[in-house]
Length: 91
Image (tube, rainbow, N blue to C red; front, side, top):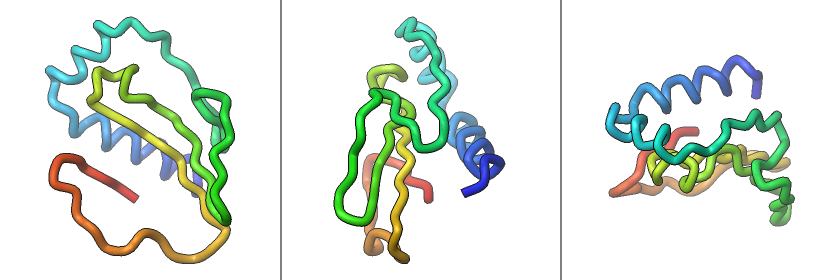
């Protein structure tokens, strides 16, 4: 994935949050951190088979308003078609 696509995604994700939720993130007073591509916010490694997951933004840092992961797979495909009733999900 190109860096431009990742930045565009995060801009879109933040733009869709209600202002009240964004205000809550300021109240948490968690220091912002840049997590590079392939890096993990918790500095952990999460690998299962042919895929890996890196945590970028944690829910406790955004008053449960946003959770962002970077999922990489060495195999074509993705999850089966599914529906979330209480969350938004982008690929």
